[in-house]
Length: 392
Image (cartoon, rainbow, N blue to C red; front, side, top):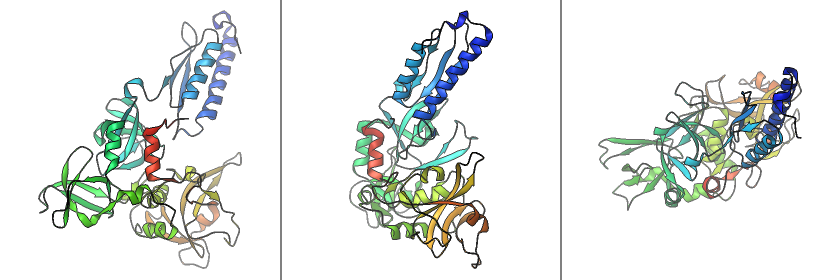
């Protein structure tokens, strides 16, 4: 598509051409980054004195090439679209250094909390702005994190960090500067990663944190990382046991730790603590695993299946807004803002804790097992982040 020089056209013709450019860019966005939570094609078309200019960024190399190709075909159009990670961050990674790091939709402490990452988790650095970094987490989620929440490293440093790890096995514990519990060094929550240093000292183990702080944690509070990294198979009973251990914990929009969780953070955390990374949000988790048909009697469901709730848009498409674990006999376990904590409810009218709005909004059910889409062992998810491009 070779267009005539835009400078020779009337105002109406220029507006028509700009509309064509915008449509073409929209098509590329839908093709390469249909979900901006996991990939980005953020491009603007701005009229300038010398002609329209494409600016912005993308995380997808193929999209960058396609945009350059389009600009070359359009006479008078220039492109300054950046491919992330930016050149100065290529080969740069991070390791979360605080027990629970808050990840936000935009840079700034006042911005929406969209997810969290646990101490010891590797991240990919994509962009930087005013002390904040656009990052990618092992579940491929893209959002902003303050620079103080992680330490920078390269691939060699990341490989060394992941080589000898232990994971926190309790909902919460502490790291002290001495075995006598003198000064608090850090807290840990379930799933945080540390390195053991030498043999235990009595009941305590000396550990190293990602920023090289060291301290002592009760040895029995630690588990072998290998069991988390290579779980072998999805054990539904273990996942539900982990889920039940969270009952009563508070609801927190964006939460993905045992401190507090939102609905998909709850299901994600239960899988993570059993060795699997699944997508972050309910509207992403609904594409993981395999579909389970729903009928009035819920006859095809098994314990541990994920139930998805929501509504239908005007165009008939589904809008998934909530997720929980099916427990059998019409019951489900979930973190709901309506309850404000993790609890059980029922889909059956005869039960005292019947949730009519959940029954009315039940849309889908999915069964997540090893090898099914979106169910990735923790070790593999970590490796994907730094052993090959995480973009398409």
